[in-house]
Image (tube, rainbow, N blue to C red):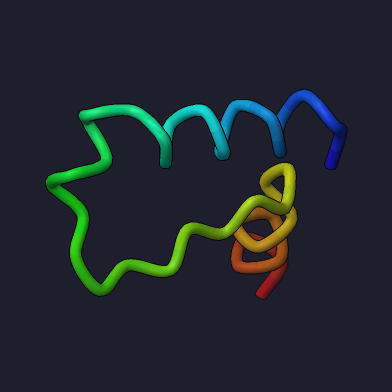
Amino acid sequence: MTWRQIANAAAFLLSPAASYLTGVMLTVDGGQYKSTLLIF
């Protein structure tokens, strides 16, 4: 995870496009979660 990924997530949450999200947990982990699912 880099500072740029965090900044992009913050910019998205501050944008009008984020107004469509309700009750969503936005995970910023650099793809770590998805890669752990592929191991099993």
